[in-house]
Structures are given as C-alpha cells and as structure tokens.
Image (cartoon, rainbow over all chains, first blue to last red; front, side):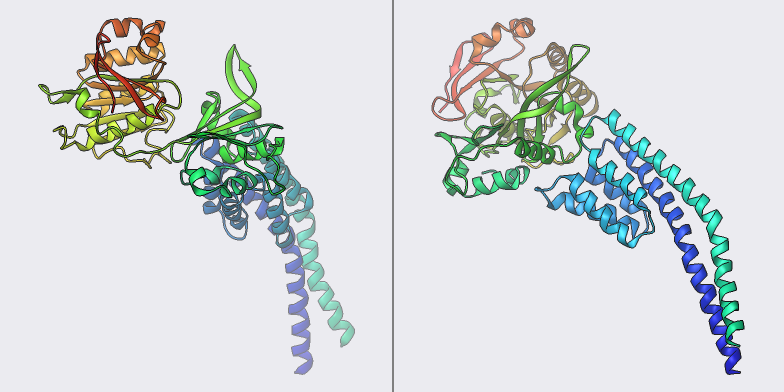
Length: 172
Length: 314
C-alpha cells in the first residue's frame, strides 16, 4: 500500500513538473498575444482619439489582465508623479521589473523598451509607424514562441511522465 | 504665483523659484528659460535672475529645456501637433507657454518647431471684478444689451483678463449696471480664457456661458451661432481674414460681439488691412484701449464707433 502510494506521488509530481515547464512556453505565447492587444489599443487611441500618453496607457491597462496590466497602470502613475525622469527611462525600469516575473524572453522585452524610447517624441504619423512596427515584431515573436511551444511542449510533458515512471521502476 | 504652474517646470527650476519670497513669486508674470542663459523671471516691477544653491545664476541646460518641453507636452507630442505648429501651448489654468527652436516647414507652412532653445511661461491671472467699472461703458441702455466691443492692447496689458471678467459679468448679470444675464458663447482657441482642462472651465466664466474649447476662432464662432443661439459671442485675439468673415456673420445674425486684438492703440488697428473694411463699417460700437502705463490693465481710453473718446478708465 505504501509502495503504491509512493509510486502514485512520484508519477503525479513528475507529470506536474513536466506540465509546469511546458507552461513556460505556452505562457510566453499568451503574453505576446496580450501585448499585441495592448498595442492595438494604444495605436487606435493615439491615431483616432489623439489622447495623451497617460490616458492611452490607462485605457490599455483597463483592457488587460494582471500582471501585464500592471506595467501600463504603473507607467501612468509614474508619468503623473515624476518630473525628473523621462518616459523612456521609467518605462525601461518597469519593463525590466516586469521581465523578472514574466515568461517573456530578453528579445521580447527589448522590443518593449525600444518602443518606450521613441513614444511620445514625434509626430502622429511617426508614432503610428512605430506602433505598427512594434506590433509586427511582437507578431513575429509570437510565431516564434508558438513554433517553440509546438516543438517542446509535448516532449516535455511526456518526459515528465516517462521520467517519473523510470524513477518508479528504479525504486521498486 | 498662480497655482499649478510649478508642476509644469523641471524639479530643479521649480525648487529655485519656490525659494523666492512669496511676494516676489506673486509678482511674477513670465518665466523665461533660454539655452545656456540664466533663468529669468519677469515681474511686475522688473526682472529677477534667481540664484541656484551655489549662489550663482541658474544656467539653463539643453536637458532642462528638453525636460520642461516633455513635461509640457505630457510625453504626447503626437497629440499636440496642431498647437505646437502655433509656437505655443496652453496649460491648465490658461497659462500660455511660448517656445522657439528650429522651424520645420512643409509646403512653405510651419509644420512644427524642434530642438527647442527657449521657453516662455506667461502666467495668466483670473482677476474677479476687474471689469466691474467698465461694463457701464459698453452698455446699450435702450436695448438692455451690450454694444459690440473690441478690446485693444499690446501683449501683457491684461486683454484676456478683462475679456474673461466681462464674459463672467455679462453671463451672470450685473446688478450695479442693471444688466440681466445673457447667454454667452465663448470660443477659446487656446484655452486661455476659461483655462479649461479636458474641456471643463477652471476659471469663472459665468453661469450662462457655453464654452467651445480649443477650436479655431472663425469656425467656432459660426458653429456657436448655429448651435447654441447665443446673445453674445466672445473671442480672444482676432486678426485674420477668416476671423473678419466670421465676425460679419455674427453681427448679421444679430448677436453681440466681445473681442480682443493685439495693437498699440485705435489708429494702429485701423491700419491693419484685414480689419480696414470691418472697422470702416462700424462693426464695433466701443473700443477699450489698454496699456500697462500704470500697471497691467490700465484703461487708456474708451472710444465709440468713430473713434471719439467716450470715457477713460479709472
């Protein structure tokens, strides 16, 4: 009975670890999708509403789920409270902070940081081009993330199950 | 100093100005920042060059100007392109910030100004009651209405302040002069009169005033006479041919006018080609000429349609 319980626990743990590792790839894809939604909102608000950056970011934050929404809502707060730092600087800090708790790759984060360096500093036509370029890059990153997930998710999940079975065989 | 203006300055500059004595701050009418030059404040009684922490004049760096400009445009250059092409922005409270730098032309027209090298914060003041003594002089007692009035004065003479208070009095009504409140339509192209923020007036403009904020004057006047059935239309700083055409429309619609214009005196505006016909047609029944001889808002003369003096300020 004890052996059977132990075997079950090893199997459940191994499978869970496989699922957790696989979810890293799936979550990156999901975050990149959400970011594209955010940038579509930003672009529409800027080009049609000609709304100020703080309002645009606030509307994007409202449409997103946590924790991604927090990066936009915190940017709004910082914009309102900070006179000494430019947007590029505070945005980079927020993106770097968010990167530590998200599944995005360094390359994904760099796209966001580069957007922050140029947003709000030029004409509407240039800003729309910048938003569209950022969207295109995020789309490419999502495709890449999907391809990686397709290649790795199933093998990792299987590996979790198989390794736990191997452990059970070795122990017993 | 008017509330809120320090929020639109870089921290360093705001702190230096904040260290001045309160009476000195209260007298400031302009804050001027020029690249590589000392920070300059224009006050009612002369100029001040505030000192920094090392007791030296505060020299403005390119970074100070860049920071100040980004605070002014709220990191949203794209949203303010039209205003930026005019060479100035209006911030909440109706304060106007002018700037110079490198002009960017497109098809011969000024598209925008980049590489800002100078900023001038002009502090707007709401002075309640400043128009009290003047309302009598622009009234038509028979019609129980105001006369079409043009306020003339060079920059920094209080034209907008006077217009704002006249709008408030005409809109609310004035017991002293016996004027009942009128429906006033106010076109505030640069948000200086009402000091509107997100369309909501921050200054007192009267309970019967309909405000069209941030709209070109000529189009705004025509829109308001069609949409809001005003009894009085008020606009600041007329001068273009489009303005003149719109003014003719307003007068022909039987609506009274209250305007301001840049000019040294009555004769100087008579010489302006765009206004010649309008003034020859006696479109305005009263001219209020302002100067700053005895301080901002000095009423030099009040003239009738033919330019004859009918009163002086007190």
